[in-house]
Image 1: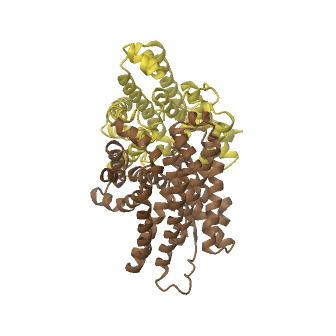
Image 2: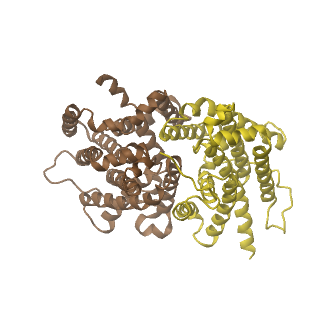
Image 3: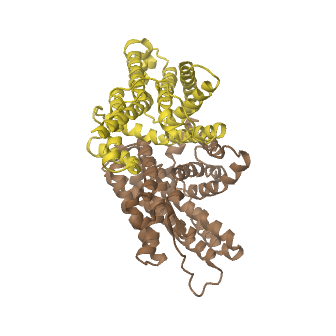
Length: 290
Length: 328
């Protein structure tokens, strides 16, 4: 029983991290129909920036905000300089660009900061967990931050004019631009937000996984599995899917398949969802035109 | 820029027609010349040339799926690995001779590709790329797993002995390997070339141009797409089997996820949906690590990434697009 509670809490907190990553994938997918393969690597890069800022002696939350801001600006820059030219190109060109970005971010991070794993502090280490050691302080903190991010993104899309414009641009770019919405700029903004949310997931994951250039490689797949399970057309579904994947992964890793095959489990989950519920649990059925 | 990208898209329809009169004899001449090459090379160079051919075959497999059918795979390293392991296990456990183990491994890969492709091809574009990448990450961990270690040898991998060449052959093992690879390369390139011009090939190109329109025209899209996945896995699996024979050793760590990425990089740089693309891509992949090490010791992979970006922006037809200018 104790073991089960431990697994549940571990699964839940990694699930929150997957949820952030799934949300950042869906943000870009909704607006452009693209999946940014470099999302994980960009998040790792931002986490390194946070680590450098912490090394300068800045307080944790200042470093956190700084890294997220750098990620936001970096995401917009990447979109404007590199992604915009392939926006209307065949999918293969876009995927090739994302692969190129992935390789570059990974390689440059390793070049600047080395491939050794580093410690990364958690600001929630001093928090008391619930029920003794069942839920650690960091897990609670991850949950809190994830909820804040989700709420902020939700409110942004619901309540602000810019958010409304972004939703409109995602649904119908042509009509939106006729209505005077600067579609290109909203896309850049969407990329910036996705990179910022991704950076949060990287910073939350680093105390658990230790920081190294390949940290997010596996996480991206879990985030993708989560997005797919929840429904790639629905941000909240995707986030919930991320949490579910975290729980499934930890429980199955502990009781069913062993830790080595966890990744294979994510793959099986993806294939299973595709076979039996292609639109995910909460996704919308889409119809495409010729 | 966009017109160039569109040209990239509209290209394959021409591939069938273009240069049938001139290109074909030229291709056979090159193959003949390539057969004569080992007589002028040392052992090590022959071995290197064999490696190059193996890479070209692997990229050819990817070209069938990604180039002609338009379905992106970031997981072909997995089929490369499976081909290698199948052939080694067949040779080691079932005492199958090497010349038979290669086609058998290829057939098994065909089955695996079909099985994986059927559900995976419900996804399109980037999502297909992601799930195939998951495959590339998952297969090495599966090969390491204890439950399979009786066959796979676990983390250590398996060594095999290369059979001696037939008695009449006096030029050495590496030259024989080279000729074996060349024979497979010629066979497979010829087969793919014919496939693309056939009814099936036109169906594949139609699926790439517009999946919905293709099904509206009566093409059984899931069937043909899965078939393309199977054929593609077969070809890349053959390359894997040949590579196991060349290295005389397989281990899970010989097939990192980056191998799959490098296949796609090679194909895009060489030229997607081009007959010569896989060959040029293979040369690029083979020569690049050395160049990259020279340019930047710290971040050799960044050179790959930058080259990839440059090719996408400046040469959407890949390096083989350069030759088009001379043709006009």
